[in-house]
Image 1 (cartoon, one colour):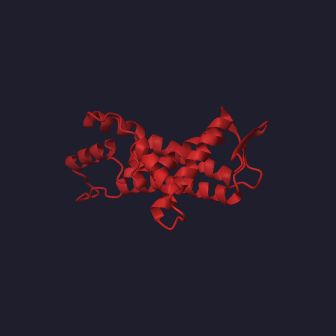
Image 2 (cartoon, rainbow, N blue to C red; image 1 turned 120 degrees about the vertical axis):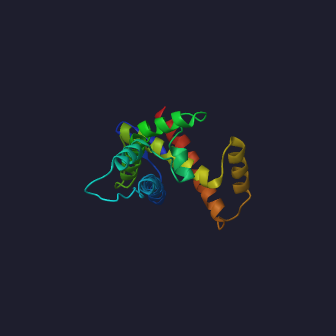
Image 3 (cartoon, rainbow, N blue to C red; image 1 turned 45 degrees about the vertical axis):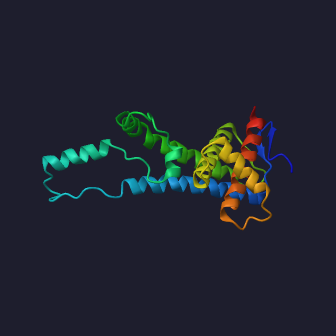
Length: 197
């Protein structure tokens, strides 16, 4: 297996096969979609007003409180992408989420989109520094989502999954197919990190 990334004078050349690039771009797009879908779900149930022409003081206050609060993500994988500001104090955690989550979501989505767009360019794909950083961060986000879906919480969990994968002859089992993706992403990300050092 050749090196998936190479440093050149023009930038980082992506040496993945076209199918691997397409798969990685699709995974980046999927995570971007998760971030967007979860945001829509959280804002999908606004309170109804009795008279839209004349909102009561209580309606105004409720609307202000709703606009100042940001509920936690509904999808555990998305929650893993958006860190909790304080695990011990729910009020501090809510305040941190209110101040940072929307901006973090947008930055992550923009980075995922940038990385995906770069990977889908015609050959040869050479990443500039911003695209390289976007791809590194995007692969981290994809791995976090896969880790959540696979129930990986510790290094021991990941090692056990890797050992289970080594004993499998085919990838018919969806869990093992996801494990293979996680393994490939880990290798690609490590290779990209070593290329840019």
